[in-house]
Amino acid sequence: MNVAWRERWIWYVAGLGLLVFFWLLGPVLLPFVIGAGLAYLGDPIVDRLQRWGLSRTAGVAAVFVGLSVVGIVAAVLVIPMLYQQSLALLANIPDWLAWIQDIALPWLGIHLPDGMHLDAPSLKKILTEHWTDAGGVAAALWANVSKSGAAIAALAANLLLVPIVTFYLLRDWDDLVAWLRNVIPPRVRPVVDQLATETDQVMGSFIRGQLSVMLALAVLYSVGLAIAGLKLALVIGFWAGILSFVPYLGFAVGFVAGLLAMLVQEQSLLPLVWVAIVFGIGQILESWWLTPTLVGDRIGLHPVAVIFALMAGGQLFGFVGVLLALPGSAAIAVLLRHAKQRWLLSPMYLEGSAPEPLEPSRDSTQAPAAEPPA
Image 1 (cartoon, helix red, strand yellow):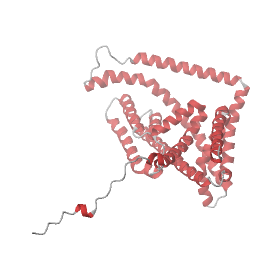
Image 2: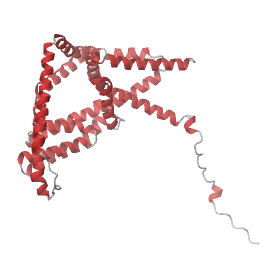
Image 3: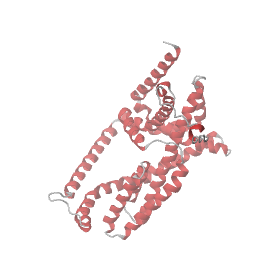
Image 4: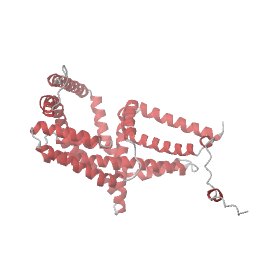
């Protein structure tokens, strides 16, 4: 085995060992993965504060305070409201189906086939029973956890570790990146630098770009629907923004749900105009300002790749796998792009390819000269 193959096997074994490491220590790694993700998000802001004259520690403290305020506001205000409106949304689904069957379909002149009907009371009973069962399971689970001192200690330790890990990783982020770069052998360092840069661009286009668009749309739709008077504004606007990473899916789901909820709530057509205006403004802002400004023309992750990566990561490594799915899929996308370029230039691909067509000569395009008269 030559030196090149030996080095390749070393990298293969190291990658396999890393996967086994994540698989075995997934629950322990959770606060560290969350802290690393928050540090990755906050590093560009800290760098900008440093350019404005702040020290690294002061910039980290400012960003850390901002992240803490956002987390506290979300935990105290947004999450409870979102939970209550989610309960109301589930409770209203059978009533929506009954309204569609009894009012909307006859008004549109649509009649269901004989023997087919939307059994709203049965659906409401099923949803109520399952939600009660889910609440009972959650209550029993929390009761068991509360009786276990070790479980409470582990939960408290994880909650305390996240801000501590975030602070120190954010403070030493540039030093850690430099240390990792110096560990790489110098002869392969340019290639690794290029791959890391492109991976960061792909990650940035989604995390710092697409996620910003999703958050902005969620806020816009929620506030707009609340101003329009919709009682379920927060939950519908939230999911419309979250699903917007798939083109037109968030708009379609939010628009249909908003129209249906407003129609059942108000029993008139005029409020539907306000729902349409809210989503129309959201689409205009997304197409003409949010996406060009925050995402631009950078190559990001395909929506199908994002969905598959999240599902595969959760199946393989649990919640830690979900958190690592995006950076992992970004790195794989960059590697596949370079592998495709090398394949298209490889002798195996080019061997036996059709020759390039010859350009016609000037003589062949000219008309034959007339023969001189005899």
